[in-house]
Length: 129
Image (cartoon, rainbow, N blue to C red; front, side, top):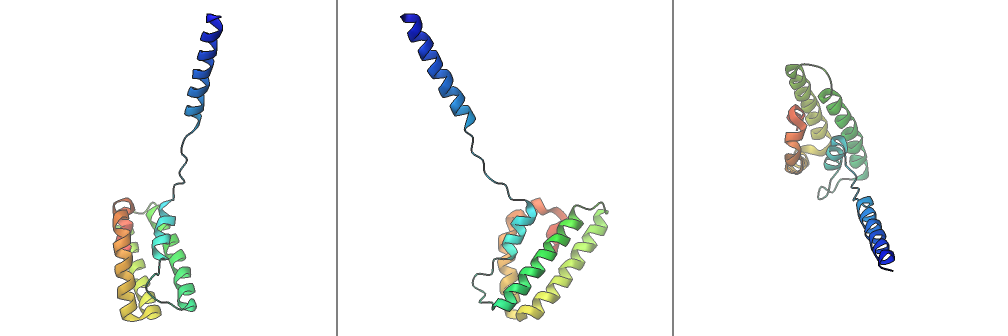
C-alpha cells in the first residue's frame, strides 16, 4: 500500500514537472525591417489623404528594402555611409515633394523620436534617418 502511494505521488510529480517544462511562452520576434517599416508607416496626426498615404507606404517599403540591402551588403563602411546618405537625400526630396515642408518636418520629428531606440541596432543604417 505504501509502495502504491509512493509510486502514485512520484508519477504525479513527474507529470507536473514535464507539463511545466513543456509550456514556454512563444513571443514572435519582429525583424529589424518590420520594426522600421512599422515606424515609418505610422502617420497618426498627419491627416494625410489616401493618395499621399499610399505613395508614402510604397516609398517606405522600397526605402526599407534598400536600407537593409545596403546594411547587409559586403561594401566597406565608407561605401555604406555614402549609400545611406544618398538614400537619405533622395528620401528627403521625395517626402518634401509629397508632404510639403511643414508636414515633412512633423513626420520627420515623429520618425526620429520613434526610431531613436533602434539606432544602436541599426548601426550605420541610422545615418539614413
